[in-house]
Length: 422
Image (cartoon, rainbow, N blue to C red; front, side, top):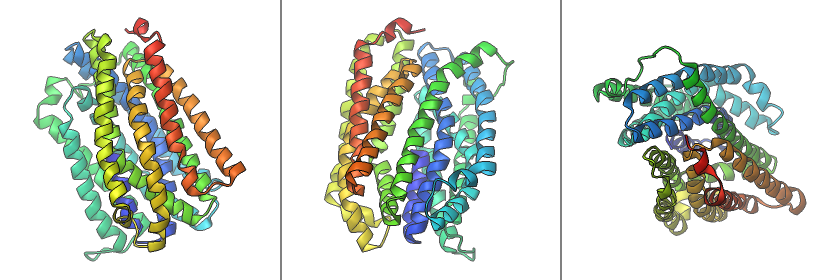
């Protein structure tokens, strides 16, 4: 949620600037996230491996695994930065119909791209701390990042304390500085808590091809899956952009509010992933369904709290992002729709992360490919043949969650994943 919390803050402030800036931050931000999620896939693979070694009480191998993930993460981070720097504007030009939104998206990305290095650093530490069941530090780093981002958004977007008013570029720069602050905190925390010594982090031992390959084998399907998943969501926003600037502004507000509603989902999904691998490390894989069902019910309860507030105070929630009354009223019906989508995802994400936690990431990739294909087909049919409005288009989130839940549960129940545990 760390990255998404930054986007929530940016959306809330840019909603006071204009609908073009609101839509452009959505497209520029989504393009950034699509690439960043490649690195997040490496992080998820690392989290699974670290949790498995933690279950085996093998601290030395945790550190060696961590360092070999750095060997993998560093070149990929530089490649992703290069793609945005040299190719970003050329990739976006044929995809965005509005010239105003295109120019604003490029301006946003020109600053935002540099945050990729610090974002990957956060992913690396997050994978480590979730893997060893020490998640409080992630909360602390996220609060620091959010505080820095809120303050700098206020200062740089609107030009306070004698600084120039940078608009959408100020939002991007504030996000980069906030990510840097979070990474600094995580490094200092690991040092002063003696975790570098305890788990042998940053020792950078001799490169071991076998360990590197095992990390890559586990991570690459998740990298592809994350890239495709966020890529399809980016495609969703591109289709919405062609419906009109108002529809894109509505969707960006909904995306930001949806992310807040999904806070428990992402948190419990990480727990399900890590604890599933931890159980296997303990040779207690028969307890997996008991774990996942408990996680599902806890996640539904946590998500339900957000949804209740969403139904009770829709106008107040949407007004956080914009003071345009017409835009608020047009957005409320979409908010109601995504509430039901969140409930479906609360179930789907738990079982899907259970699949990943078993180490069967190739199966996870296949499941995601099937779900995304049906998701895109559903949206295409709605827009092409039924001329659907933005409210109907967002029902796709409910479809996505239901299909993901069914396929993931079916594999865990009937698949032969126990025979493939190593």
